[in-house]
Length: 198
Image (tube, rainbow, N blue to C red; front, side):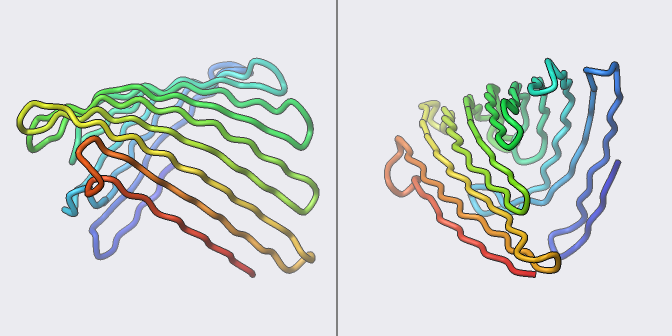
């Protein structure tokens, strides 16, 4: 599969493939090239190469393991593992962890990253709802070789509602907050709410 885009920020794209190794196991690899704005406000081209394996444990559960190599504004390798559960017909749950080290391509400073997240979802007839919490801790090397710790929390909420055969309503409410050992100037957060009707 693949996709391509272009615009004021320059070209972007994604290419990948999935191989069904067995009835229960699939292997996949994807490469994406994005235009992103770094934390310091500069424009960077960021590439991500993701390879992974996903295995169904039963009709109601599956696990996955991914290796993510990142290059561009920061370079490094992170490992992600997670589980998806569907214990009942309308409910689904999931969890994931991420551990890795990134290196700034300009300064060579390293960032040790640890992250975890959980999510739940509910779907019934004409309604779907999902909610999740993500936590991330970055331990970043500074130019004077000291380290700064940043912790971030992200809360995600999404819903879809089919009002009639022709009309749909969608929405989301996300809230993020972070703290830094460097002080309040380096901390931040945002709240985003969206409602759509079509």
